[in-house]
Amino acid sequence: MTNNKFYSIIDFGSSKVRFSVFNSKLDEEYSQSILVTDNYKEHFENIKKIIKNGERKISNHIEEVILLLDSSKIFSIDISLKKKIDTNTNTKKLYDLTLMELDQIINLNYIDFKIIHRIISKCKIDGKEYNEIPNNIKNVNNLIIDFKLICLPKKLIDNLSKEFNKNNIKIANIFCTSYVKAVNYMRKVVEDKISFLEIGYSRSTLIVYEKNMIKLIQSIPIGGNHVTNDISKVFKISFDEAEKIKKLFNKSETEFSYKYDNNNYSNSIRDVLKKNISIDILKKVILYRIQEILDLTFKKSNISKYNIRLSETMLFLIGDGSNLFDNNSFHLNDKFEFKSLNFYSETDKDICYSGLSFHLNNYKLSKTINKKLGLFEKFFHFFSE
Image (cartoon, rainbow, N blue to C red; front, side, top):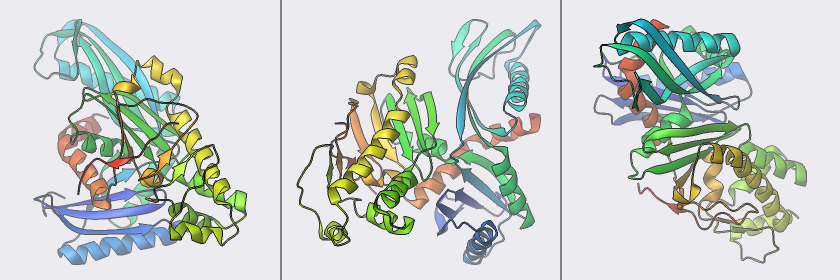
């Protein structure tokens, strides 16, 4: 990939596939996206087409891609490992032994999953605490590391790898989309305590940072499509029609509340009324599901367990499912007092670039490892284009 000075990134989402090609200066040369179809074979035929379009645009053959993935079955694990040996050695050797043990534990206890990210939250070397593994310590005999692991289903990874191999395309690296986006967007904020809640198609993922270190990662198998399904079932309409109705509320400056209200609606939302759909019931259907997503992602037990103070935390909402929050107000039963609430309107380029940036910043490390083994007020746009 680096020889021809182009980087190709595919974000394989649950509802949409994004494809971008960047040059050696990290400028985007080509971008295209397609909607996910139920027909798996047809879906990959469409992916092949957009890759071919990219090849024609850059006049170069694409041999490798960086693959970004999320899944409703994504999960994270907190695990602490201790390595102690009688003879002194260096940190690298001891760290490599720790990674081997870590892989064995996951392979034995979570046979259907694969580690995508190993994140060090804390380590102790001979009693001294570090935020990352130092490479310059030679005489070490005691190492304790606290890991946060992000895992994805092996079956999903294996199926995608086979399909890309059939088309002579190598996967250079696989990353978790929500994680690499949070890493990239975090660099734009000068703040000690930041949280990202990504509401995806079929899952929602919360990532909490404090002083650039991850304190909490948790995901639930509920996302934007569940809101659409609720609308479809309650009003007995098709999923596609329900999705169109839901999107009418994006940037609509609507107030969602459990109390009856008599807002003035835009002409596009008034069109819904012509379909004999109660707009008040519709808003409550949306509100109840949003309430559930936030209640589950911000479990009070986990918030207190990790000593997370929401009043000191800036919350950013990302992902297509969070578009409902853009310019709208939500008044929910549970009150979470965040320092600030922000909506980030991300682009396909933002998402793909997040994967590329993570790849470039971690490529050498990943190669080494692989070889060894009433809540919301108005949301506002925090980042300008």
